[in-house]
Length: 275
Image (tube, rainbow, N blue to C red; front, top):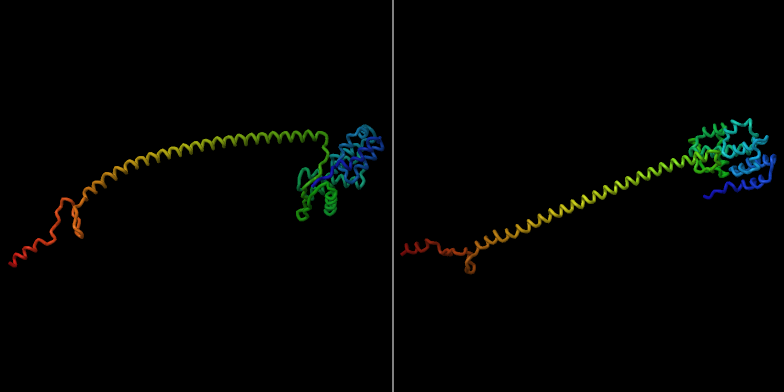
């Protein structure tokens, strides 16, 4: 979902402040810090007419504007004696902005943390304040009443305090260095994996070649020995089993053997005895 430009509501005060001086500038600061929808103030702080308040009796208004830009309600309480008093609209806005600061540190904020940070002992009042912030699109979240936790999904950004940008840049640089080291480590690991894969592939190809060689040798030996056996023993047995022609219905007789008489040898002897 598209978010509104936070500078749109501030634009009116930027135009008025360019021609305002002294007391008129303090009035603009009071109006801007109370106006609905105005939640960023860095551009207003940077205007020369606003910076002219520094070192004068109205410098407290410049400090108040800075507090609304990047401070919290607890910061105001600590310096309340040296700052202008807040009206109800200013107080509510500063507490809304304080919730944003808490949400930038953690997306799950216990009710107890909010109660201490915003000085609101009553849970119902706390929930009403959070709901108002959601309606103003300062944050997007859900109140978990059972667990008493504010679950934040989105929060608007706030202006950076002086020196804070350098801290963020340093953090980002550390993150970048860590990321570069991780990418280099992953690259080295990928190279090692590639080398190991290539070595395994070559070893497999060599093993396949050796296996094929052995199979060819075995097939060659089997082919040569098989023909000798077929032409040796089987041929000899074929020669030995040659037979003479026989009469139809008679038994086969091996070659070189005489066929036995069909009459038994004692048949003629019986005939002589009868004579």
